[in-house]
Amino acid sequence: MHNDKKPQEKPANLKLAIKRLLKSLAEYKFWVILTIVLAIASTVFAIVGPKILGTITTDVATALMTAAKTQSAIVFNFDSIAKTALFLLALYIFSLVTDLLSNIIMSYVTKKYTLKLRAEISQKINTLPIRYFDKHKFGDTLARVTNDVDTIATSLNQSLSQMISSVVTVVGILIMMLSISWQLTLVAIATLPLSMGFIGIITKKSQKFFKGVQEQTADVTAQAEEVYAGHSVVRAFNAGADMEKKFYQTSHNLQKSSLKSQFLSGLMHPIMNFIGNLGYVAVAIVGGGLAIDGKILLGDIQAFIQYVSQFNQPIAQVAQIANLLQSTLAASDRVFDFLEETNEPTLEEYLPMPKQIKGDIEFRNVVFQYDDADQPTINKLSFKVKAGQKVAIVGPTGAGKTTLINLLMRFYDLDSGQILLDGQDIAQMKRSDIRQQFGMVLQDTWLMSDTLRNNLRYGKPTATDAEIMEIAEAAGIKHLIESMPKGLSAQIDEDTESVSVGEKQLLTVARAMLANAPMMILDEATSNVDTRTEEIIQRAMENLTSGRTSFVIAHRLSTIRDADLILVMNHGDVIEQGTHKQLIAQGGFYADLHNSQFSEEAE
Image (cartoon, helix red, strand yellow):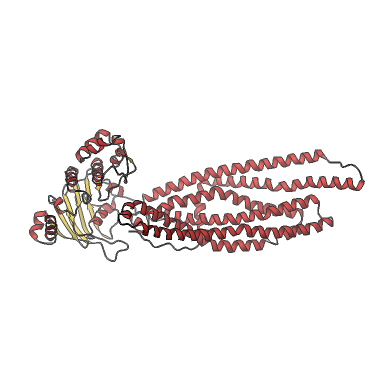
């Protein structure tokens, strides 16, 4: 069950998002600081250039004016000009080298950090309680692993150095302009409050749309994943048009948020250019007047005009990067929210798992309720199972059969009561230790995109080919393996068309047999197959459950007549228990259920 309620589209808590991102980057702080230092050095070298170039212009202008006044030949100080030009060239080379190093190091940090994030997410998925996946779409989780991490990586790689460079450029240019003329500097920065005002307004309005883009991208991913996974069902019910309409609406919502965010983001550059041009004109007029009065050198005017032309560009870049960083912070919020989800509860000390598991199971007054349920699914359930018994669990849909198994495997924790394994409370044991004692065959088969060999030895990676083939023969799939062109090396997955539903189920039975766990769980393992395949699976399961405590959930009562104990469940409680003969003799719920199935089969 998934919770389809959409997250609210509201601005991220910027301070918290930045704090979380910096904390996550802490182990790379040396490289980040080195990147910042190199970016600053590169920018400073580049900023000094126009001032030095202005001295050359002043020398040339002075020589021309002197020659014009004295009516003599023009005399240039080529040695001074050449030295200044070489020094300027060296500065630009240093600027280029430090800029390249800054970008290379930032690329390295980004790759390492992205790998770290994906590893943390992968580890987190394995520690989250099953409850989390009941409440969240699989596609949303997938989007956090892919789209959101990619957004963070792209921003760090492309934007961080540029942001530092732009900020340093603004500060550096301001210092250089003040060193030339404080009057012209005042004229140049008079437009700055106007620029900042527009940036603030646009940034504030665009943030919610950038947040919306990340959330709606997750919605599109989730819907695509669901439709692709269930494409056969979509076609079978001719629901293609409806799904297309739904997907169009979801994509349209994403398009609207993207257009609004990009439109507001796109306003930055033309507005900043327009405001910058106003300042440029004002500086040209005032600077001309100062030059005429002899209060400023011609080369300084040239340098100042260059600085003015460069002054608004980094401000516009900062504004543009600020928008990109909003996307990054929105994405990082989603990633860190996921990483900070509560893990499955753990204890400081665990009861040790006995070396030899007998398989005695006892439920004592077990109560359990799903988070979104109105009433308990399991209500004060109590029963005992002796080691080696084959226990069948039957009852109508919603009676709590699968929930009982989920509690036994500790996929969920009890609200109250106890489940005992060989007399020990499983709540005091490690989940991994408990699950290692069970082999499972579920109604829904699951196969990896891998070889037959690796699929079969999923629960026992060290199994040899000889062991696999021995188990395959017992499970009735030896002929399937031998019919494959590459045998055990044949590639299969969940969507493999060359393997039938029944054969996939037999593969999962063989996988459980190979794991050789002391207890078995079979959850409606024969519900999706034909009668002949059911007989094959039944024989395989008899081998599988022989001598082991086993729990079998079955709708077809004919498959569990030989069970040592049958638990009849209804509304979360065991209402009858006993052998098949005992329950038939009672003439109660089980007898009615059996007789209704028998009459249906006869008809």
